[in-house]
Length: 152
Image (cartoon, rainbow, N blue to C red; front, side):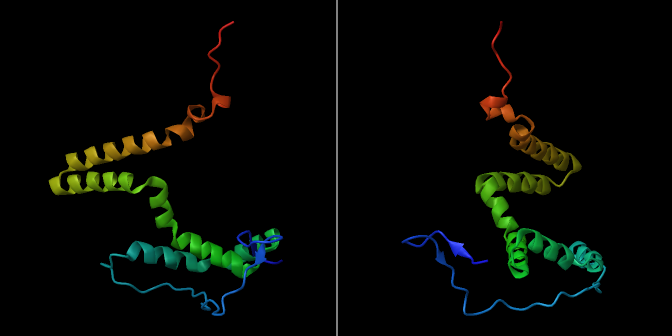
Protein backbone atom coordinates (compact mmCIF):
# COMPACT_ATOMS: atom_id res chain seq x y z
CA UNK A 1 0.00 0.00 0.00
CA UNK A 2 1.54 3.31 -1.07
CA UNK A 3 1.12 6.38 1.12
CA UNK A 4 0.12 9.40 -0.97
CA UNK A 5 -1.05 12.97 -0.50
CA UNK A 6 -3.09 15.17 -2.78
CA UNK A 7 -0.75 18.15 -2.50
CA UNK A 8 1.31 17.52 -5.61
CA UNK A 9 0.74 19.02 -9.03
CA UNK A 10 0.33 16.95 -12.15
CA UNK A 11 -1.55 13.76 -12.88
CA UNK A 12 -2.34 12.86 -9.29
CA UNK A 13 -1.02 12.53 -5.80
CA UNK A 14 2.71 12.34 -5.35
CA UNK A 15 4.14 9.62 -3.11
CA UNK A 16 5.14 10.75 0.34
CA UNK A 17 8.85 10.37 0.90
CA UNK A 18 9.56 8.78 4.28
CA UNK A 19 11.69 10.79 6.64
CA UNK A 20 15.38 9.90 6.36
CA UNK A 21 15.47 9.76 10.16
CA UNK A 22 13.36 6.86 11.40
CA UNK A 23 11.21 7.25 14.43
CA UNK A 24 12.72 6.28 17.73
CA UNK A 25 12.14 2.66 18.63
CA UNK A 26 10.56 2.40 22.05
CA UNK A 27 10.08 -0.90 23.86
CA UNK A 28 6.75 -1.41 25.61
CA UNK A 29 7.45 -1.69 29.34
CA UNK A 30 5.15 -3.25 31.92
CA UNK A 31 5.82 -0.82 34.78
CA UNK A 32 4.26 -0.96 38.22
CA UNK A 33 6.15 1.63 40.24
CA UNK A 34 7.09 2.33 42.88
CA UNK A 35 6.19 5.96 43.61
CA UNK A 36 5.86 7.89 46.88
CA UNK A 37 2.48 8.12 48.60
CA UNK A 38 2.51 11.92 48.26
CA UNK A 39 3.40 11.92 44.54
CA UNK A 40 1.19 14.53 42.82
CA UNK A 41 1.13 12.32 39.70
CA UNK A 42 0.15 9.15 41.54
CA UNK A 43 -3.24 8.84 39.78
CA UNK A 44 -1.58 8.79 36.36
CA UNK A 45 1.12 6.41 37.56
CA UNK A 46 -1.58 4.11 38.98
CA UNK A 47 -3.26 4.05 35.55
CA UNK A 48 0.06 3.20 33.88
CA UNK A 49 0.61 0.39 36.39
CA UNK A 50 -2.96 -0.90 35.99
CA UNK A 51 -2.63 -1.08 32.20
CA UNK A 52 0.59 -3.10 32.37
CA UNK A 53 -1.50 -6.27 32.37
CA UNK A 54 -2.90 -5.56 28.90
CA UNK A 55 -1.18 -6.09 25.58
CA UNK A 56 -2.22 -3.15 23.38
CA UNK A 57 -0.49 -4.71 20.40
CA UNK A 58 -3.25 -7.35 20.08
CA UNK A 59 -5.72 -4.56 19.33
CA UNK A 60 -3.24 -2.60 17.19
CA UNK A 61 -2.38 -5.63 15.07
CA UNK A 62 -6.05 -6.52 14.63
CA UNK A 63 -6.93 -2.97 13.59
CA UNK A 64 -3.98 -2.75 11.23
CA UNK A 65 -4.89 -6.04 9.60
CA UNK A 66 -8.58 -5.20 9.33
CA UNK A 67 -7.86 -1.82 7.71
CA UNK A 68 -4.83 -2.92 5.68
CA UNK A 69 -2.63 -0.29 7.35
CA UNK A 70 0.91 -0.97 8.58
CA UNK A 71 1.09 -1.66 12.31
CA UNK A 72 3.61 1.15 12.75
CA UNK A 73 1.25 3.63 11.10
CA UNK A 74 -1.54 2.67 13.52
CA UNK A 75 0.80 3.05 16.51
CA UNK A 76 2.03 6.42 15.22
CA UNK A 77 -1.56 7.60 14.77
CA UNK A 78 -2.58 6.46 18.26
CA UNK A 79 0.40 8.17 19.88
CA UNK A 80 -0.01 11.38 17.88
CA UNK A 81 -3.75 11.50 18.56
CA UNK A 82 -3.31 10.91 22.30
CA UNK A 83 -0.40 13.33 22.59
CA UNK A 84 -2.35 16.12 20.88
CA UNK A 85 -5.71 15.49 22.56
CA UNK A 86 -5.33 18.52 24.83
CA UNK A 87 -4.54 20.79 21.90
CA UNK A 88 -7.46 19.38 19.93
CA UNK A 89 -9.83 19.95 22.83
CA UNK A 90 -8.61 23.52 23.18
CA UNK A 91 -9.16 24.14 19.47
CA UNK A 92 -12.65 22.65 19.61
CA UNK A 93 -13.72 24.52 22.74
CA UNK A 94 -11.89 27.71 21.93
CA UNK A 95 -9.61 29.72 24.16
CA UNK A 96 -12.42 32.01 25.32
CA UNK A 97 -14.45 29.10 26.70
CA UNK A 98 -11.42 27.54 28.36
CA UNK A 99 -10.48 30.86 29.95
CA UNK A 100 -14.05 31.30 31.22
CA UNK A 101 -13.86 27.86 32.85
CA UNK A 102 -10.49 28.68 34.41
CA UNK A 103 -11.86 31.94 35.84
CA UNK A 104 -14.77 30.04 37.40
CA UNK A 105 -12.32 27.72 39.17
CA UNK A 106 -9.95 30.53 40.14
CA UNK A 107 -12.74 32.62 41.68
CA UNK A 108 -14.03 29.64 43.65
CA UNK A 109 -10.55 28.77 44.92
CA UNK A 110 -9.83 32.40 45.81
CA UNK A 111 -13.00 32.48 47.92
CA UNK A 112 -12.05 29.07 49.29
CA UNK A 113 -15.47 27.98 50.54
CA UNK A 114 -17.62 24.97 49.81
CA UNK A 115 -20.41 27.31 48.71
CA UNK A 116 -18.10 28.95 46.17
CA UNK A 117 -17.01 25.56 44.87
CA UNK A 118 -20.63 24.43 44.56
CA UNK A 119 -21.45 27.63 42.70
CA UNK A 120 -18.52 26.95 40.37
CA UNK A 121 -19.85 23.44 39.79
CA UNK A 122 -23.24 24.92 38.92
CA UNK A 123 -21.68 27.43 36.54
CA UNK A 124 -19.67 24.71 34.75
CA UNK A 125 -22.70 22.44 34.63
CA UNK A 126 -24.60 25.25 32.94
CA UNK A 127 -21.82 25.74 30.39
CA UNK A 128 -21.63 22.03 29.58
CA UNK A 129 -25.43 21.81 29.34
CA UNK A 130 -25.44 24.72 26.90
CA UNK A 131 -22.60 23.18 24.86
CA UNK A 132 -24.29 19.78 24.71
CA UNK A 133 -27.75 21.11 23.81
CA UNK A 134 -27.26 20.44 20.06
CA UNK A 135 -26.18 16.88 20.87
CA UNK A 136 -29.39 16.31 22.80
CA UNK A 137 -31.52 18.28 20.32
CA UNK A 138 -30.18 17.80 16.76
CA UNK A 139 -33.20 19.60 15.38
CA UNK A 140 -31.57 22.86 16.47
CA UNK A 141 -29.21 22.71 13.48
CA UNK A 142 -30.75 20.16 11.16
CA UNK A 143 -34.10 21.20 9.65
CA UNK A 144 -34.64 17.63 8.46
CA UNK A 145 -35.19 16.46 12.03
CA UNK A 146 -37.21 19.46 13.25
CA UNK A 147 -40.74 18.64 14.27
CA UNK A 148 -43.27 19.78 11.74
CA UNK A 149 -44.99 23.08 12.58
CA UNK A 150 -47.62 22.69 9.87
CA UNK A 151 -51.21 22.18 10.84
CA UNK A 152 -53.75 20.29 8.79
